[in-house]
Image 1 (spheres, rainbow, N blue to C red):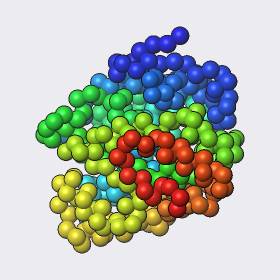
Image 2 (cartoon, rainbow, N blue to C red):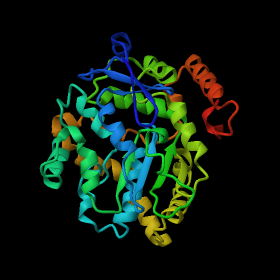
Image 3 (cartoon, rainbow, N blue to C red):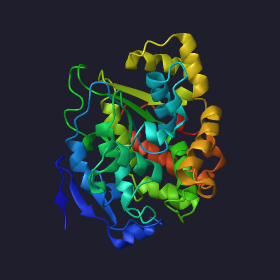
Length: 349
């Protein structure tokens, strides 16, 4: 039986066979497909998507939006640091990024078998402190965000079409700013696989090639990839949208930070931007992230949970067979055909 969201999207329950093929720890109430694009989310996402569609953003909000494993954590830390820690002396920087920059799409994970109806303990502690009397079923992260002072830096893996329709209007005044990050789909796929494989929460059982094909066919959580990117690409010229390629951020971090500085209006000096670049470098974030994850998961579980693997571009070359590379190249070509999306670095490198 299907139903409709406020966004106009149709919700259909994925079959048991579809869910079984995902080869991961099941969600208690299963998986839904959001049509017409076909996005796959946990059933509990439907509890929050209408709330998100009606969500009132603030003019000083910054939303870091990505398809998963496209540089989200790095960009979150960069934006949070530029807005809240430009002098690198804010004690909150020692907290987990999850507690400083909440995820709009996080609440849907409460339905995963591993979480048993609640998110990680530190987030629940913050929820109880900031939202006394709040109901978990109304969205832990959504309520924390509502109670948080600005400027809020938030993360979102949902696409534009599931967010409030008035989030981006013609004028820049009184609207949130969106920083959208995407990357070479091949590197996204490698990162996606290893996150699935090493995550204590999802316990993915599939092999590498199965995961890549699930991503291409839109048959695993968060997919399909291309509609997500294309929706953002169409909005890249909006004054409130800053579109970033992960590869550009890696190749010339300072240049991209200067562009971001202009977009956010943070007016940081070159010296401070250089300090931000160092503070948010892969080595610095990886070291800090290990300690933060230990606080959230504990020593034992943290060894299997990491948001920092290699932080490089082109790692797909160490994973793809020639046959798989050809298959993925055809998938990329098919999806960029007829568009002006620049993915010159994604093919035959």
